[in-house]
Length: 350
Image (tube, rainbow, N blue to C red; front, side):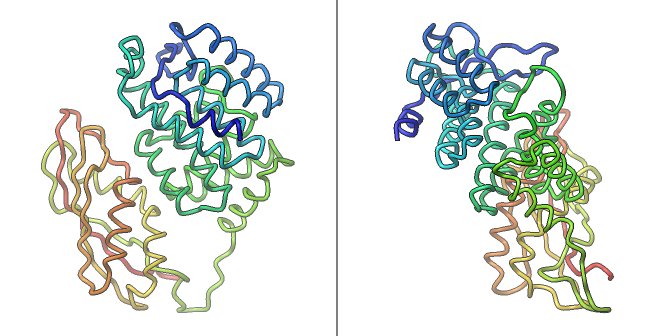
């Protein structure tokens, strides 16, 4: 398909226009090829009018004409997804991720790519888009991992929250689409109540969307009542009952690390559900996670210590989840933190 072929040929560098009030705005700025800029303006107009297939053709033409900003590939992914072309949308978002993550191709590209805030927001927006595309394609586990990658770059989902507000700073089309992405992001972060609110808002704004059924499926799972007999343990695996950081050297103190764990305990649920036999009814298991946390609060390495034989898969799942999804406080002094947190797993009281 022509669209897919041109997406694969997209450039990898980035330029963006400084946004008002210091916030990032996914917009092109000079110098860019004149032909590419004209195609982007035309595609933007088509997207605003709801002509998503025509908008996609315009963004593809802009990329072919030399546009290299990640914002172009992000917008292409948005309109392709709105048009129902999930595989092509995934390719566009992956191009945007690569562009936001790569070194400047030329000196003139360096201004934006050397701006950590701009690169971070480009990366987060592309990852949130890809997470939504994977979710709608039925790849729930991959969608959650990608959403956690986005949260590692943007822990508060600020780029999505801003897109819910009036104004041009960040715009995700069609109107209301941003709430689906917020739902996916909040679900990956263990914020189930907030995720349900986002999916409800999405359905209120886009009740006839081609993705309405997917949002309703999320709500059915999030809002299903827990029906249990007295004394029966919950279906699936255990849950995190308590945390204690026993060692923290560097910038982030142990109490702040503990608070982050408690706020985000839900990110471990998928791993624990997959190891449903780890904890016996009425019992508990203690394990430890050793982490290295950079100055921004990103977990750059994680090692799980699970004192139960045959739990290698669980340990790997926990390590991947902590690296990709746990958001920790940054270090004011710019110092790396090394920490060991002990986790108590069990079943909450009925």
